[in-house]
Image (cartoon, rainbow, N blue to C red; front, side):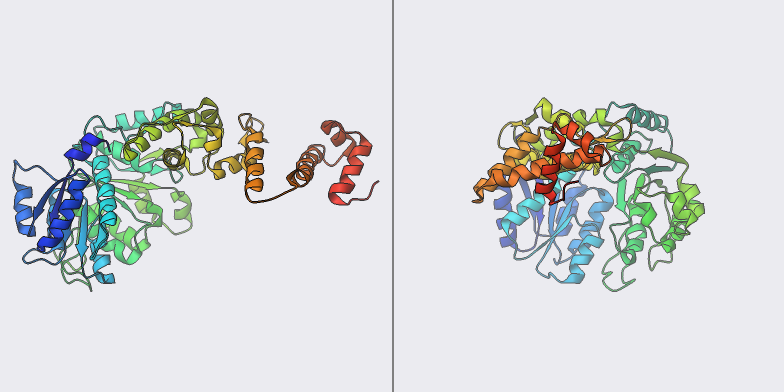
Length: 485
């Protein structure tokens, strides 16, 4: 977030305790946020519903207040604006209250007495989320849509374009980190429902005993801890799109309920007796093979066919390496915005090297790596020496695949840089005689590679290494104590 965004970002603070309002207001203003305070939730709601009101970007609300409590206030706000981040604050930091705060849609939970730095960090994260998801985010912000010029990504763009006038269900399949939620957001943004809510839920991240309430809501008093009516994700998404991530992990009982909603267009809240109509477009996603789960009896076949009307497969990053430079540039800019710092650049050899890696974590791993560069690299230009250790070692272990399927070491890898780092570490930790330790390891590594290449034929291995047969025999004795032939 840049300076201009920060000074125009508005935080609402709601608490009947004047001292709490004063402390938070002072801290937020010092952090360059605009602040508005309220001593009751009812006054805040009245202000929120005024047509000429300037909407907040994040709300901090106490739970226990006279009149409307924090949970009821949050439910009413989310009915008005489902994406509004609300930080719930209370002195009663027991497990039930904490669970209820998250269960009813709080962005996060702040227990009293709180640390000002913790409160500021929560607000910063909430505001960042607001700018990423809110349709009122300024056009100057970097787009969070899908990045890529590869044929595979262009095919996905075409599918999204073809579906732009449709309300049809879509199933997105792809490895973790490939950007399934971004595709779901793009499908929503370019659909007739674009001005209605987009609600996402990761079915694998919520305990099964809470998932039913999260999806369908619950009535007040329907179970222990249900202190107020809670509208579930289906109700929140009415008229819009509901994104069900990791649908393959949904329990069978809930699969049955979901199928009924999709077939009949209505559902009941937990503990409810009144049917609620749901006009919701479903976009589901999974990294699993749902057909295999159906065959194993772990996923309902009728639900699979209802979800799998249109299927979009997201390729792994290793299958679209031509997009890596674009992704690196995008996430380096995004990281700079988050840190409010100039964008760091990557040397060409670093980009070439990163393009040679497999990226098992896909786009999410690239995003995290760019954040690491932005925070940890000291200069404004990222060099090979700035790479985190896991990226250096992954190249040595896995390499990249050649056209014949053999693993080859990337040409961009400068192994002397790694040797230099090893030597510096040894010396900095007080080690001596490091050449005596390194030379046998160096020779042993080369010897093993040569023997593997020749299938154990020593004369051919000696030739590859530039040794005579006697030298190889002597080295085998020294390195492995192997008797001469």
